[in-house]
Image 1 (tube, rainbow over the protein chains, first blue to last red):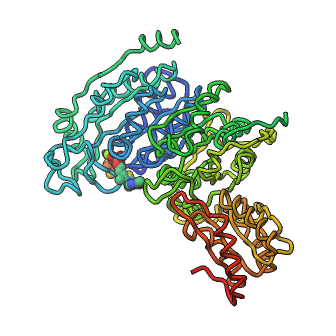
Image 2: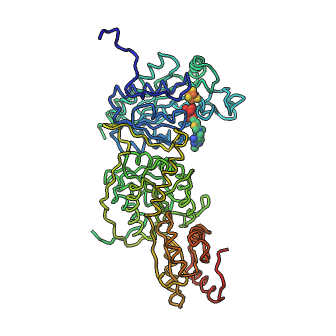
Image 3: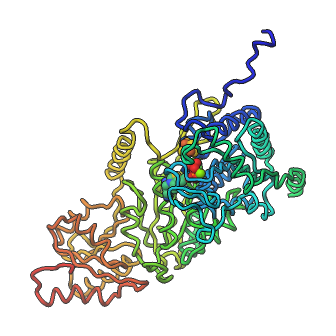
Length: 259
Length: 359
Ligand SMILES: Cc1ncc(C[n+]2csc(CCOP(=O)(O)OP(=O)(O)O)c2C)c(N)n1
Ligand code: SF4
Ligand SMILES: [Mg+2]
């Protein structure tokens, strides 16, 4: 085969060959692909269990070629905790949206991070409740209009959008916390790196990793896919800065050896 | 190995869970079941298992779901207000057909109520407090010994039918110290090809209660569940009877109420009234045919419960209008008084009653 015919862009082995139910321009599909690639590269597809949230990604297990489990709305980190404690040599991913992770599941989010469970959280922040038709989320931006904030989010009434990474960065246990985005190819590549790193740390048994990914929901924003991506850059990133908050595998390795 | 030990009911249950091979236990503290997490926090590390104090009952039951999905034996325990929170997860576990054991050491309600033992969660336990058409097997122990024995059994039933099994106890039984002969492991094993252990050498497994495609998938799933529930209803008929053979008065009670009712039967018989006790050991499935048969022969039934008319509904459904049924219920942590049970029956006898009916 000549170099020219080697496909540079292909469907990863871990991504099921079906059409997803996601809207055009949605970030979920991109993120699924990155997870599938990372699992394939780490050679852990056959020992990974993906926990799907209640949210637009409720069928995520249909699209990624690993064992799949469902959790009640917001409870994915607790389900992941139970599964990982029972089967510590498996890889467990908790995939969650902003309503799931920061509203109904806030308790589970904080305590799972605080215990430093050896799991990976993939947090897809699209600033809205996608699945239920576009209600205000805990991460909906100030002034952003949604079904349930028709005059725009008013912080005086409902508070400011919550920054998950910053919140979790106050806890001692997590090994890795980073916020990335998927609004353009360069940021997608960075997100891939972050997901890969988080999963690698789990493979090495280093504990809790949290990757927040700013993502597009053009449907509920009522805009074209391209505009949706620009909105992530122009509106979301100023409030949710892309940043590595925590990355301390060496410390975790030492702790592991000491214990 | 059949050594008798003095144990609190809650501790006998906890040790029995370990005997049954439970190695994953998740719970949030609440009285009157606190001996269970305390015991597990000591014992689980000794046997290489997990004890985890969850951040809430919502989380604890979800942890059980996760562990059960991995194919291992998992348990959670709580008391009434905590059980209310667990209903979310129980519905998901039932819908996902996962096996697990749940324990409710009931206390008085509604709301925060009080910490003394009660039986006010009968409806919640037997009708299902979560959403959707689902069932859980409900076992009703009446002593520390039964707490231990039923727990070992519960794990086998859960695995056999892929269903949550609830041990419905009350604070008095949980807290009382009694002689117990710890049960032996049953040695039964169950294949779990559905478990999520990673798709190695097989196609991937998915465990979910969501059924979207095709359009009738959810009804099909419900019909499948119903078939299973019908099978369980055929197979699980658990009762204990005391002096029912020639009884003219039948008392129906479970748990602590049944212990008092049993004494009432003795006293009534001493006084010349032919009383008997029917004690359902499974509350779902409820042993309706068995009760019907015995109640019909007796002719008069008094339901004694530590709630204000919950068990009596199943008693009435069982006798289907053919037998007259009265109710003596106490609530809020009060236990039925022996004298009151006796007097209730004696007063009917004195008045040469024409009918017996719960108001
Ligand atoms: C207990 C419960 N409450 C509410 C819902 C309805 N519901 C489904 S998804 C969802 C919000 C999901 O939003 P998010 O987590 O941000 O995910 P997205 O769809 O945006 O990816 C809600 C409120 C539910 N399924 N269960
Ligand atoms: S509603 Fe939004 S989050 Fe849901 S699939 Fe469509 S674009 Fe994606
Ligand atoms: Mg969202």
